[in-house]
Length: 169
Ligand code: PNS
Image (cartoon, rainbow, N blue to C red; front, side):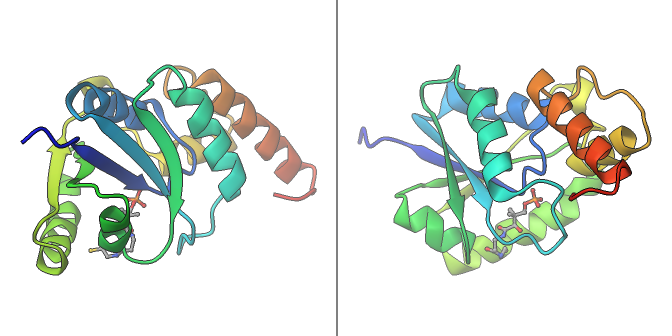
């Protein structure tokens, strides 16, 4: 059987970090296609709009021809089935990620036994990295150089300056 293996890499990506890109690059080396799927309705109040999150992802992944960026809403497994994806790709940074990821993987399997969750481990340089920490450090004036693409760093600075000057978030 030589059917194309499509993997969905889902997330909030608010914003994309070098840790996400590390997983995307590893995934693109193994799967025929990686669809980075941005969740439309994040429960947490996002810093960046959906369009901004998509644009930053598109720029950061343009170098990998088998990586595409898309959005999804509703159940991840339904979206994966629509896109004929056999794999859900997730990154595991540390043991603390495991319980939540394990629950999601088993729930997703219960709903769609034909879709496998594949966990990949990012470089140890990013094992402590998260979008939330990047936003917090950036908002408090710390440097996030090397942790996010330069374009994302620029967007973060602009967003934070706007917040400080009392303009829109
Ligand atoms: O980057 P995140 O925020 O950790 O990603 C979480 C995400 C988007 C993978 C998860 O919230 C999700 O799959 N949401 C879609 C709704 C869904 O299918 N929920 C059931 C999961 S078992």
